Image 1: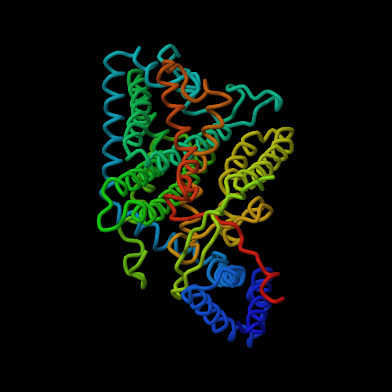
Image 2: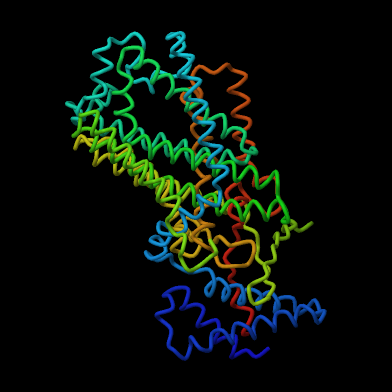
Length: 335
Length: 186
């Protein structure tokens, strides 16, 4: 073994790992790939030559050196801000288009849930309680007066009067918005993870969230507040529901990758599709943040249903155009 | 006296883009747990600290939001910018690798961490506050759900490479940081 070379490689790798590529001289950067490759072939040779048991330690050491070089060279990249920009300009909309079928399926299931909850609750208001639990209802139930229901649509989100008191009624709408964001984001993350059970629970989750929404719609409609509820809901709801559907689609992608592995092994295919589906989840998280901001800031300052509905329409068109068109002509066809 | 047998380390071979085959030692569960506990302690202390600051300012919601972001972004940020390591993993001398031998991409880091709330935080909630998870569910359904959740959480116990759900979805593997420098030069 040519020891000085290994020692040099060891030194370079050590500093590369600790201080990054900037700490190396130009000469060292040039020599690194060659040293790495020759160490790699020395390792392969040592393994192939049916080494005697006494030299086992030497092979292990060489293996460790090559392993450290590999990690320092290949696995120490830091994602740049540019990568994040590219994610929004190209990769996110592209990934959504790639999984368009699953996204459509998720939308369909959610829509079915809304429709079911709406019809059933319209027919019998008591059913509201089987779709919506108390924390979610936040005091808006069939037993509330119409005025109370209306107030819930137009209250401004003042911070709680007594900071020590974090009761539900002391929460302002900002607090409610961040509660909703975390709730929805959790649901989104859960959707992705539930993909491991072949995607079936994802469909259930989407459907049951649709039921809640439908039940609210029916409750408000029965008091003649239907349009105002949608005006309250949709400005942020468009982004939020789209995000939930993307997460649902991500879960289905994961599920389908295991059930229908195609030309790869199940494990390989899961790894490929899982990475792709995770991009959907990341994008959806940003959509939910946006939805939270719309909910927390915009909805408190604007109370006119017409303006609210207009904003909803704008976000809807915006997302539609974004997902259909963004990144279509970007250079790199991969990703 | 019979010497206590030292268990053979589990090895996993990776073929690098240059075609070199390298053996890595699969991270033992004990070390993974140690790393996780350190990381959880950091996340917990940071969240608690934020709450302490946010609550008197009547910004409880900020604490809630920041807590959520911390829980989810801490692992993501660390693994993406420290080459597959978190603070806990560094201390336990562990590292995340891509099983296909390629670089550890941000996509893979993302995929292995978006399952975390499901694999880790959800079971913790299930353990300590089951009533919040499935309010009003019949007992048998709750039991079934918990068994199901814990089956996913305990996945690393049942495969050779100690992969958890996130590792499966991301095509990653946690290994011991290779370090053996003494024997090479003397």
